Image (tube, rainbow, N blue to C red; front, side, top):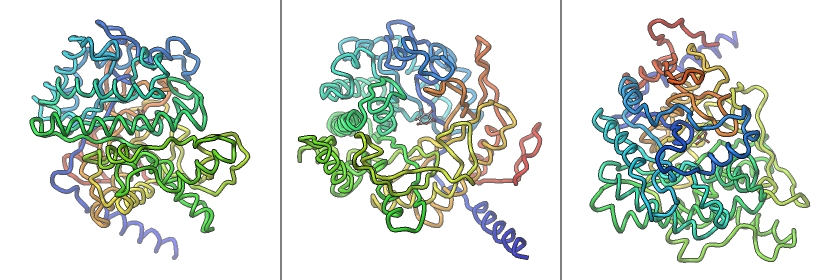
Length: 501
Ligand code: BGC
């Protein structure tokens, strides 16, 4: 009897969410990033980015020893890809610019016209097909030459050089690009690349490198935003935001310590970059300031490992985004952890041990599990923490290890996450204006190489032509875009129906 009641209640809940429609004006898109898809790593005058350099000099860091030299070869397939996007019916396409493809020296002394032509062609053909470009200025492709000068983002001068680069791309493309994202995921980029040795540039300066890097990225974001306001906003009428990554951190138990640990994790993992930009007071979250200062002092540091902003810098950074770009993949449970006496690290500073429940469905990426309800909680947290800013979901998606076309678990992921998003918009009043599926096509998944596939389209990497084939999830997404609803019973023609457990 209990089971029947539970099933009945579940179907009521499901039906409700199914009935919700995405509001008029809500934009659907797919996302990608230059190094993961473009290939053409040394075409024309393009120089190495930190990812070219890493994969060429240290291939064993990549799970399958691969690289992005050719990747999906989107560099030479603009026509094919825009046609696919058009068929999919997306409103927007989020892609990123490769800094060393446009400015081979990193500086603005020399612009490679071939690189510019490539992006012009992409932007123009998207617009000609009714698709709005959403352009990320930095999705991790720092020119290697700048990494070699003062260790890239550890060097304060890189802030100036980035602002010059942003100035160049606003002036080149801003007549047609009106949605800009300065940085993709400062937390992941800085922690994995500068604190740890999991991503380029493998700095491995735990407890220090990530903080310095993110501090400079925040300044660069603030200064870029101010530059846009002063020089471009009036003429180009565009918007500039930033994309932050966030899991949802749920308390591992009802104990006060675990509840505090989960909230601290939210503040330190998302608030680290979000609070200086989106809060009313600006600057780092108080709990982060207190903890890193206290830990640093106990470790014998004369100054905190978390740098300080001047008052003027706080003001430059505060409010330096027109929208909140959010990448979300998973949820974790957090328990309090006593971390004094350990080696300096971000994890020790946050004093939390976060983990997955065994009950949650695994994915092809060990760092992500499928927990749809966490998405809604995260959106509500952002709403209440930062006064309901406009949120654009810039990434959300599911990776497997197969690239199979009959990808029911990916469809499940999208249907379930989008249903939670619908509830967040409709029932909770969260101000979400757009959604990008990660990702358009299977691609180079950073340190996992080509072993994890997030694409709506399969790419045959053994074929020099890199043919793309729509997976069942691409048709399902197309149906969602067309109907503006999630339909669990939809089965695209030519595919066997999925069975939902
Ligand atoms: C990144 C993407 C990446 C995705 C899946 C995000 O952290 O922005 O580039 O492919 O996660 O791991």
